[in-house]
Length: 350
Image (cartoon, rainbow, N blue to C red; front, side):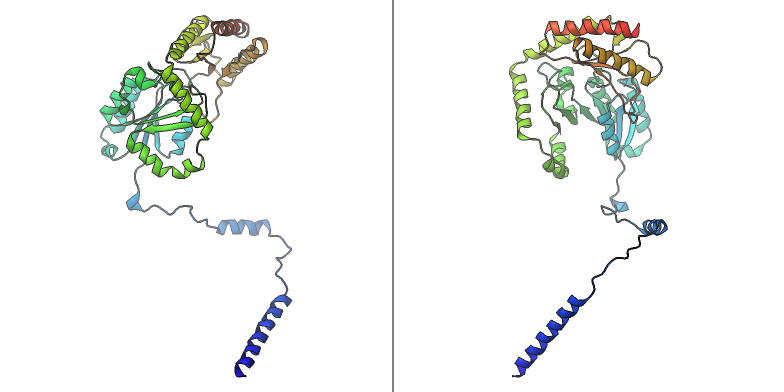
């Protein structure tokens, strides 16, 4: 009987609490909005918590040093900035400038042996069409104990006897190049890219970049297309000879183009033309080149590209016109391009 009474008391208390909670008025925030002064005061008092824990002094390391060619394109520049490294630029494709800069960085600096130091270059520079002298770069790398990061988007599948890139072109052992990165949208005609190097580099990427890789992995059909393109190149190396013949034909046809001159390397499939006489203004130069590109497309259905520059772009090289040659172009295609450019540039620039 006593237990029954206690149970009734407990149930009664529970019912009373439930009724009390249900009968309470719900909280309503004040209708009056915060004043601008109150908002500013709250913002001033707010101290956001760091997204990652602070680094202890004992765990701090010196930022890497990246020695880069001043002619690298915007994507490489952006990567250099995002690396939060100390970035030093040398004159475009000038090995004397590179050697001088490396000497200044290392002379009397005892910390360089403890800091990760890299030379960053493009195999074929998108902003000029020039080819990096990898053999000389490797000599400087070994002399000053730097590593080399090579961007091969425009040379992979193009340079070398079998299209393996700049190292094959110069006969440099591939293990002399520490890191190779390339996009697959050019010679492989697919999308995405790759970054490779020694087993140590690859293992580091697998461990450190897994969160990025597994959330942005390449679609299977794109990977299959890349593999098929590589297999095709291995079995049909004659396409490289056709490509080089087409590039030589384009060089010959554009060698006397009024107001323009070719500044790209003879083996570069990206033929780069700049103004013989600059107006002195980057914007004015670009307007002239875009006019030529627009008229070529409108009058002759020839698609060419004027190199545009972001206001954030550090590249100081002249702007120009880029033409991309492939092994699929015929002699008549190249003749049409040369005829169109010669005629239009003559009317625009003269």
